[in-house]
Length: 550
Image (cartoon, rainbow, N blue to C red; front, side, top):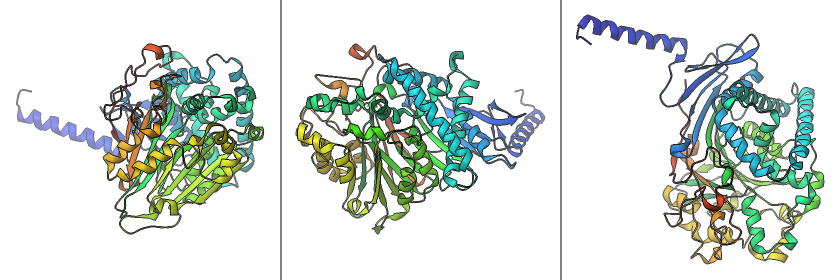
């Protein structure tokens, strides 16, 4: 610039004018922090415009592609804030469209890895599974058509399926490497947890033969089939409340996106939710959610060892991911959350859900009744009760063994314990003992992170020398039967953070304070499908919080 004061003033005026014009139009220029986009509906078609955040669109948001540097991509989606009147199903569809479009590369990569996990060496299962999903989808849409005008339950499911339909459309509007995906691919992604049980229900010959397994083989099976650790911790004088979760499954699932949804439609207890997730998923799967209703939900998976229960699994039901999303949207408290989950139980992805009502947690004062509701599901039965009294004693642990006696017995755990010993019992499972011993060491956020990444299997007597018998399992370190599976993330919040929809999150198998080697896709694991994943996992905790979008 030549220093001419008139030119300087003129240029400054132009810059200010452009900023004001954008502000008043509701459009904001591209940010260096991520890919911004807005979805519109034009002539009956959904279209996307990159580089703008426009409140007058149906949906808008930002995707931050930070996976390779932090271990997490971060997606912020906001929908339904236009001054114009749009159909609420169109708002939900636009939210899904935005996500599918912005994360298409990750969706394709995750699809490749997940398909390798479920279908490698089994050409029959995807055919059978596709037929089940088609029947389930047709039944669900028929129920929506019949009831959404009069029943808030089915209206909620209608909105969720609209978001799902938008996800499929959005991906195929921007297919990665021009490779389109059919609806079945997205049913696999969103039904990932349900598939764990659907495989046993639809192909009985795949049911785990636990009666003829060794204890080590059974432990390996558990680590490989979607299991987790969770802990809710209360400090002694109620100074603070911590909530945490560590996911277990195949390491092929470590392509991660942390998501913040703000879908402004009427009649919902929670229009905003922040949760750990995966490409192409409209749910957490882990589960780890903070909701604007004041609820936080955590989940760990239980086993079904009683094969006869699977005869109740039919397509005329709602999958777990659909019921969980609905309960998160509609429930104001833990009891209602359980009531919603119970309806149309598919008997798939059979879990323990911990629903924490943050409004009942009073720092330095009291834990009020109904602060913690625990919900457990198996085929034919869902049990939900207020377990606040357990939490008042200091902590609630969760480690893949049912808490409720009826669920425990019907699932077949007593027979497994009789065969394999007390490691599968609620009181004496290895993680039950470790949590009981170590939860008292939690004093602050750092010590909460430590316990949820804990694995000292070489010296901890409760681990019995097995790296799977730990809060954060490392199946790849087993001397026999090693596999690329185990604990691969941790999410931690305290009460104040949860109220702001914030958490700390880390991706990757635990290195536990440097005592364990980082996991690497080399050697015996080089042939596992790991498209888009890092060669070595050396990530640290990062802070997750919703962006302040207009």
